[in-house]
Image (cartoon, rainbow over all chains, first blue to last red):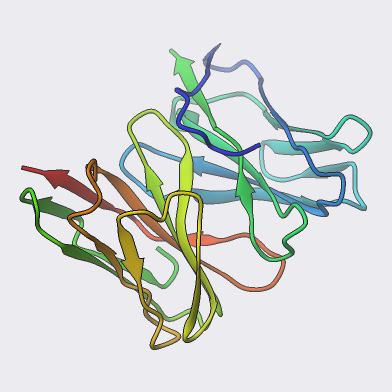
Length: 112
Length: 111
């Protein structure tokens, strides 16, 4: 979806628990998806990406799941740490090829 | 920031003034983008450029202008026509079907 000036939803998790952040996309022609992490006052940083020919991709403590049937993307963070507190954005390339469209973002707060 | 430099980090603008935000990259990426981010909100696309000497309006281009005379540079001017310019501005570059690399941002405040 597009960022439209709405305030971001917040997910609060206990340190050590797993986190799941969800994202819906609108265009079935999208073939590339990416997750970014943005810490306060900084630019977004790449976390993990996935192409449409895959359902799952794993990184270090992170896993991205892609469900093309329902146009849904999720980011799973294992053993969430205080340093994971940030805003997380999904993005996909819709039908524009190289141009990404960003979702609204989710704030992740980790409680110690 | 992976070869993208945004300057200045903080910028203060008086009412009615034009200001220019700098974005320079040494990643040799063809595409460059400008986003605006308001507190607690997502990214909104202002302008983008897929190639030198060409640029396109994004979703919120009114009150902004850009140029792309060099591959390495994509400056954004916030004009006096932008009535609410206080925000965090992010520049990004891209190459092919891949993720963007973002700069560290410029925080613009109207005083």
